[in-house]
Length: 162
Image (cartoon, rainbow, N blue to C red; front, side, top):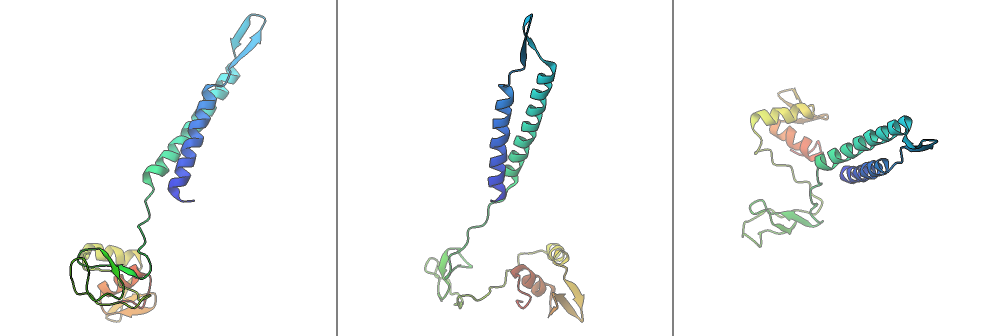
């Protein structure tokens, strides 16, 4: 189950628990008739607080959950110019006419690092623990000539890319 589903489940459980707590009978019969029982009122209060916390946690999970990016079906890729889905082996985009390099299905495409500023590039390098070594940069034991190449390898998940 993903984070959003767990959030919805917690939200529903919390709201149902709060509704049940509100309908709880806090009175007892006595010789003077029906009177409120302090112990039952405290129990009702505790159930409401607990249910409210569960509902708020669920709402927090629902609001902060990130949706997974849509996966491109196998054998397809995005055109670098217009971002439409085209065949992986295509030489030309059928939507915008841009010439593209045909890919072998299963070939790893290095992520574009040109869109990263130098500050962002350094942040990503720190995140992936890319270290300067021997006039280049080391990522998981593989030497890369530039920091951009090492970051591209790290973002692709394959140390050999770049």
